[in-house]
Image (cartoon, rainbow, N blue to C red; front, side, top):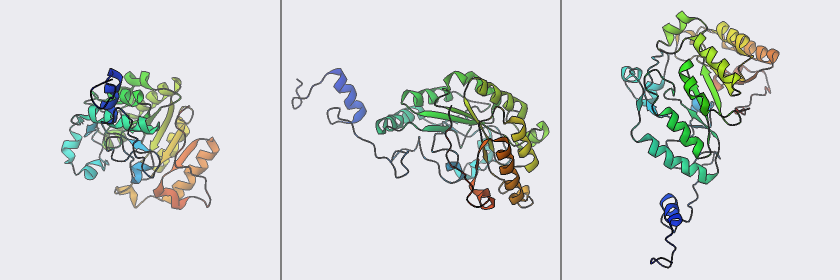
Length: 295
């Protein structure tokens, strides 16, 4: 027996007290938000809202900035960050891994095992700094969480393929074109389309669930072609439109929506039509927001 109110001071109790609070190691149950899958007060593992919330229930962002220099990227505006600074590279967030670990413990205590998306405001396989990517994923795994990566980094993701568990995790790629010249104009430092496609094939061959983000849609015919040419190794498509770009006001989005759902049904591919296109869907269309993203 210890000297403090008769409490045991064994190493196990001391370790539990550090993690769970000062009440003799008694666990402090985290408060789960009304969404049912995020923990109150957590900001490093968080529930994204708006258009991002249509892609994933949970997310985390290890870096500030990206380095892919995509012309259409809206993230600098959201972060109130100078575009040149954002495009200049991915800077590790201060003390990120410590904060992530503390929040991951809360998710484990709450029994939450959802996939956590990397990332919405950066790219985990950006061209300049991936120093936090592996430890971030390892921390999520250690605390019982699944993960998904969304990237334009192509083969820069392959050194991390060993971390992906087919029964838990997913690998996703943004595709806006199959033409190198178009990609170089809009996504100046991202991996070229062929590199992204080959990386998708390799993850698919490894048994990992793969999906493609068709957003922004720079050209509707190209998006339809992407589905036709990739559906044998892509498990799911998440389909949106373009906003605040020249093609926003000139594209027949109704026609595109009807074409894309017809194609998806013909090829029997899983898909989700994002909110911007949902007004054009046929009545009572089955459009599940969250589709299971693992094998």
